[in-house]
Length: 160
Figure 1 (cartoon, rainbow, N blue to C red):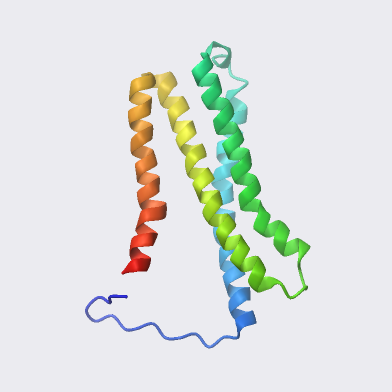
Figure 2 (cartoon, rainbow, N blue to C red; figure 1 turned 60 degrees about the horizontal axis):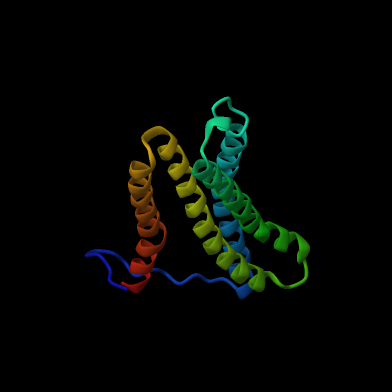
């Protein structure tokens, strides 16, 4: 890992494997709380959308986009809540390192589904507001943004 001029190497933590697992789980659960709030807001928006006066006028493609986006949001919520269920279900069973490893992987998968759900919402809204061509272009741009910020940037930083 390259360091900036004047940057000090990181000090190693003095913690037991159990303390590390405790810390990692707490950090992960806090991250998931933040992300889950966004998922809940998106889900509420989509549920409300189905009961607006304009919803019956959506064409088949727009309705399909809505259904897929709603289901992606439900899947995202389930995946991102699974670490909490794992922790509760395996509490005090000495499985915290396994919980942390699996939960970290689930968080990564959940972010993929969240990016898909958010981009589905962008596609739906832009399609209704601007038309299909503009919606596809804008959604391609937001998809690239998510890929770059959430996946390529961390990957590049890990490699440096």
